[in-house]
Length: 273
Image 1: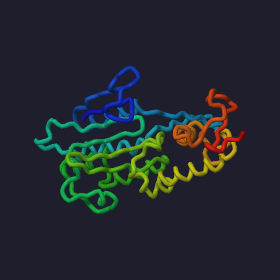
Image 2: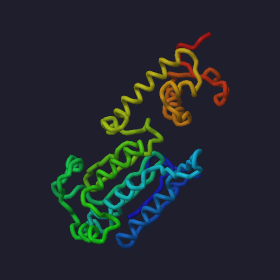
Image 3: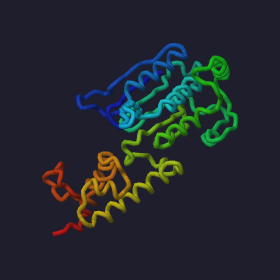
Image 4: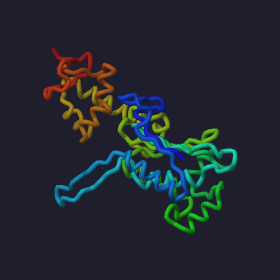
């Protein structure tokens, strides 16, 4: 198995210093060792928000991706990969991008299994039955068969993130988690998710229309965010105002000083004299 961190959004993106990877590790050993090393790799390459309660003073750490979902994705990779002689030299790869983590496993869905069956409780064919039975007996990595998909979906939803995308490709099976920081880059599949804010595309169009209507007169970023029901102004500006500014649909009232505390935004072609 291999794990890499890309300093951008695509595999060929380079970092500020021309680096191809921000982190890169080959992960080998027995199943338990690969499992633990992969988790450790993701833990050190994940953002963590630290929240201190005003009432109790207690600290809460919120990871960029829910850890239980990551554990299930890693366990599924190790358990269900194709270990046949034809795939001996192939690596399963965990790739961390700025907006997502991609778990690309060697070997697509086994036998008669389909993407549709992943959404059901129906028992599925198992490629490595001996490994599954062993790990069920030992516990730790897996305890209950056929709950991994549901755990991934549930934990991502609880974290207010899009549910995982499952892709059955010619040679590989791919699971993708998005971290919610760049919703404007989400693929079309997420627009079909009934569980993610009534689908991303519809939500985004509603917010855009709401901004343009509200900004018939100049408004501050705080006013716009509050009107649209968002508390995080920085994320709101990044996800909504910046794309509108870039497209020219919204303009700044003080364009020469974009960081001015008096900065306001107004829908283009409606600027007051």
